Image (cartoon, rainbow, N blue to C red):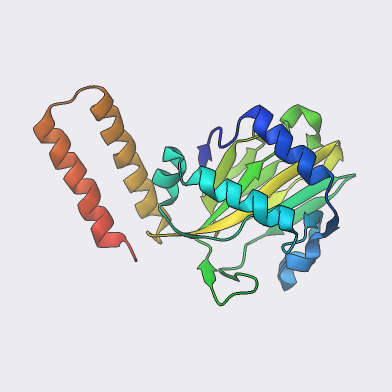
Length: 226
């Protein structure tokens, strides 16, 4: 399941974040890559210990906690502290799969990477290339969203970032451990939740709506790991 989470930040908010990030010090992106990923990773990152990364990362998490689409699609139990990357001058990240478990720096906490997330911070017409390409059983999906929009996709997916041949692509990326481990189950719950919301807005009869809502919560109760 791939889900677009629109307008986590407005264009003006994304511009402000972008300006702050561009003024920061960037390091080789391979510092946070696994052994296999490091062989195909060619980009720059904001150091995880940089106070700016911590401040903006917390801002992202706070904003996502208020975003109905994200909460419904991800059903988050834990969120890995957001990281930040930059691609320019032909930089790219070849095909890879994210590590299944990520240890949080300077803590004993571990996050299972059920979902990968990319929050785009550069406007798509400001750079060439840089598409996030995600592979699944239906083929390849190329993603290049407006600044402030986010995409969620299964952490088990093979994915890559195409070379950026003009301009610079700034983004935040992180992982989510969901209350519901299975992608197919999360997809069903999302469809059901969206249908309930639409029926609620359409003033559906109370008894069927209560029954449908009960089905949603009973499935969540059956599948959730707390």
